[in-house]
Image (cartoon, rainbow, N blue to C red; front, side, top):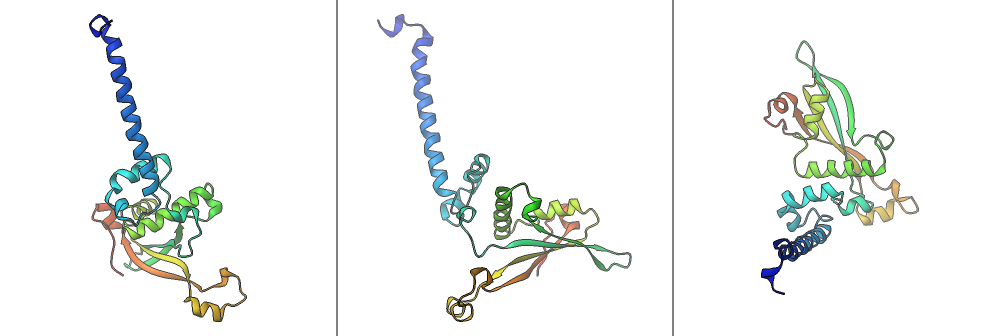
Length: 199
């Protein structure tokens, strides 16, 4: 029996099967590639493919750096002070907060860790004004300026730590500091200019 006597659908079925195998193979290669690329956001491959691999990683929940799974002693919390202007034009503190909120106020540990990592990533990429800043300026309609800080533990050099903290628990090493980073000007954010001022 030759192909001329077969129905056209019977001839096309093997072709569809071949295309499906090709598609699934390409998808499998892309998926495995993403698994290896996503844990290292500092790599040149990650930075070069950010627009394609990161949305895919976010979609399937795989965009987790090594910090998500391992303790990171250099973790920093993003904190903010929201200021309004009074009738005389002076800045007055309205409220303070942090991103992420405390663990008990987030859905669960996974949500907390994801927000913690996203906050650090946004700081590195200088995207806080157009992301978190935009949300805060919308949340606090009367906000004029939002001061951004990083809070984290500063560790001593290893030699000093050996001498000064011998016999103490690791959580007592170093000191927690709050470092001012920059101001977000809500008027600029609302107008689409950006809103990040210098230190």
